[in-house]
Image 1 (tube, helix red, strand yellow):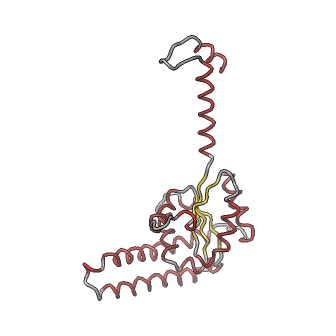
Image 2: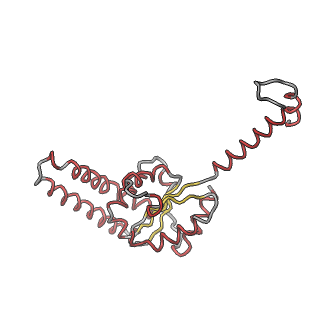
Length: 215
């Protein structure tokens, strides 16, 4: 088929820069190879609490050695004086997200903001790799505790805002809205993570690599 196309193109003038059919075929094949190579590249957002930095370091170090994977992480992707919030929002733009789920993580407003952002994506369940540090998440009673925690955080912030003139509390009201979103979403998030066959944390980076290569 390739020989037939080349033969048909010989001697045809296509614009002032055309020389011969073989050049077009070679350029076409090269472009296809580059597109396939580019499409195989995957980006991974590493979401974690700094108390779990050692685990994050281990995962980052391993995945960063793979030629087709780019790890997005706060310590090397947030420029000086750049917006932390905008970086956190970018979790939605990555192919996958690794979430290191610990007690610190589940009680962190920043970590849980990242969770609520990725949950806005329709297929988020297939795009997250949960690294379970807090094994209490497999207990429904523990789920209730985390929901209550965020309800209480909402109540405390709402009570404090009521002591302010509303025109002076614009940013606090936005934060309250985020807290309420976390309280609303955390039950579903915990159920999703608890329902996964989560690998042992000692080999988690190998399992993440394997899962990405299989997709």
